[in-house]
Image 1 (cartoon, helix red, strand yellow):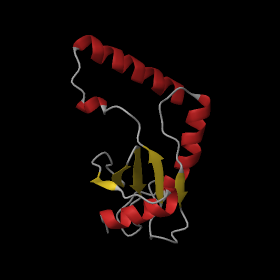
Image 2 (tube, helix red, strand yellow):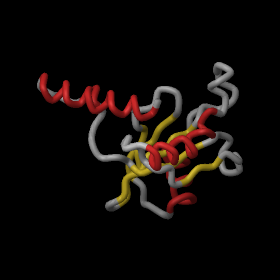
Image 3 (cartoon, one colour):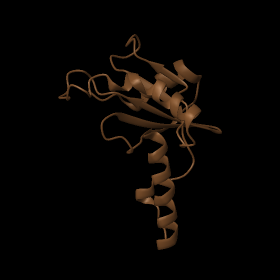
Image 4 (tube, one colour):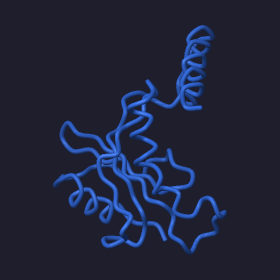
Length: 135
């Protein structure tokens, strides 16, 4: 069951401080429910794992719990632009779902960028170098 923006705001208040938070559903997530939250000069992404009652493959169940360590490793061992996870809760004490909070990175998804051929080739080359580093 999805959470609403008011619940998302309460989670942000608890984890990174009071807003008031503006924003709402952030269409970037395909598996998780994702919110963009902005307050003054701060912007964050709140990602919530699906609840356990939904249809999931065995490797998808509670996979968000791996993300803090993965993000930290990418930040320390690569130049891949990933945000640090600044808060997470897997205890399910506030809400019956796992969640992570991270700052919003500047920029826009490559899928939404309007680039010329040379710019697109450069972006894909850079993206390829990130994939190499991850592997």
